Image (cartoon, rainbow, N blue to C red; front, side, top):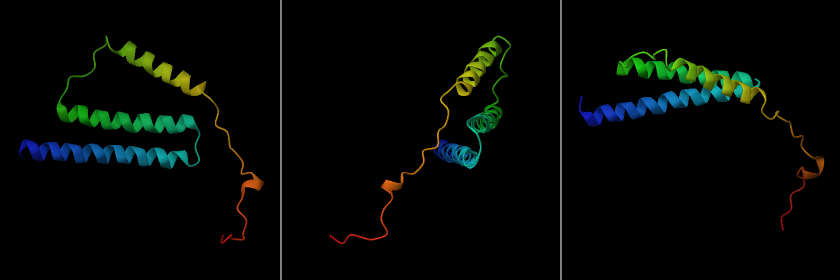
Length: 104
């Protein structure tokens, strides 16, 4: 395969993977709490990253880098857990449109 064809294939695969991840997050966001949505996003991103890592035949992460990865994960977990709570904003009755249409 030519380098140009390979680059095009990589672009298509990347767009497809990120679209699938976006669809998963939107599906989870319909009725689930923020923590589960974030877990789904990170889990799907991890699976995509592992697949790319394997295709590129990169070496495994060494032990020296693991504490940094665990610290990053802990910071993300704490920031999500302590973040602002989601509020439901009710519709205001005065802002609803009237059933009558104005033709002016």
